[in-house]
Amino acid sequence: MEQDVVGDLELSVGYVLKQVHAAMRAAMDEALRPLDLSVPQYACLELLGQTPGLSNSELARRAFVTRQSMNLVLRRLQERGLLTRPEQAPHGRALPTELSRDGQAILHEASVAVRAVEKQLFSPLSREQQLRLREALAACVASSPAS
Image 1 (cartoon, rainbow, N blue to C red):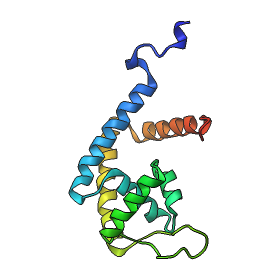
Image 2: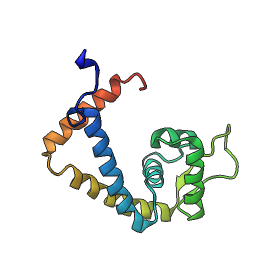
Image 3: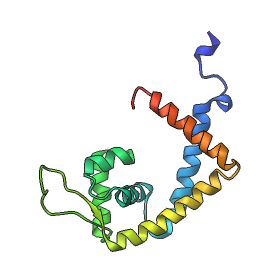
């Protein structure tokens, strides 16, 4: 019956994973602050940099935020001139979003900063260990009922 409870949190993979997430988020917040970007704004820019034309719904899903939150993110980035959206949807209701030239420039700076955070956080692990960890975590995600 003792195996049915979480037990010692220091031995829980989920708890340590949450600690890693919190450490990464805090370090990303700090690295992005000089660029006047939040983590969701950076995620939006990175997603659009890799897949231009994503809709609000697609961006929200991939950035792990609600559609309402993504609307605010998009509005703020558009006000800063970092992305473009048509006034009317070319078809359907989705407004495809793309990075402006300024958006591409700030994405490059932000991406370099976030990569440095990731490299620092995972520096105790060898490249091979990092790849194995990524593969193991991806396998967990793939087996999740939510995926």
